[in-house]
Image (cartoon, rainbow, N blue to C red; front, side, top):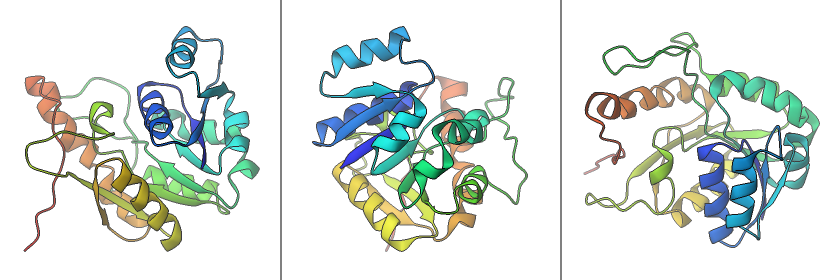
Amino acid sequence: MKIGVIGSGEVGQTLGTAFLAEGHDVMLGTRNPAKEEVQTWKNENPKGQTGTFDAAAQFGELLILCVAGSAAESAVQQAGVANFAGKTVIDTTNPIAGGPPENGVLKFFTAQNSSLMEKIQALLPDASVVKAFNSVGSMQMYKPQLSGGLPTMFICGNDTAAKTTVTGILTDFGWETEDMGVAAAAQAIEPLCILWCIPGFLRNSWNHAFKLLKP
C-alpha cells in the first residue's frame, strides 16, 4: 500500500520506517520538509519520501495520524479534510495536556466521557478512523521483543473493514489485536497511555507493553 504519515516526530519516523520494512511505499508528512531530522530520516530510508501534510494525505491509500494530541485537529485541517475521504486512518494520538506529570501521572485535556479520537472522527466523517499504537512507546511499536510473548494492542473504530486492515498490519508488526468496539471505546483506550507512562516517569522503565490474558 501507499502509506501517508501525518507527523514526522519519533512515532511518525518509527512507523514510517516499519512500513518501509514491510514493503509498503511511504511518504513522511511534515510541516517543514527541510527540517534536519526529516532529512536525516530520508537519508537513512532512501526508499521513503517526504512532503507536506497535504502531500502525504493525498499520497496515502492508508493514513497514519501521529502528531501531538494538542496539534491533531489542526494537522488534519492542514492536511486537507477532503484528502482523508474514503481512507482508513490510524489514529496514534493521545490528548496529553501541557505541563509535567504529577507523581508520574499525565493529565489529559479531554473530559472523562470523551476522547480525542471521537473528535478526529467527527472532523473526518468520510474517513474510517481506527485507534492504535497509542498505548506503547515508539521503541516497541514494531516487532517488540518481550519475554511475555506477543503484546496486545487495543483498537477501536466504527468501520469493521478498516479494523480488519489495521489488525493485519498489527499482526505483521508483531502484535496481537483486541478489538474493543466502536470509537467511543477510545475513552478507555486513550488513558492506557497514562498508565503505560507511569513506570517510565517513576522508575525510568519504558520497555513494556500491555497483555490481555484469556482463558
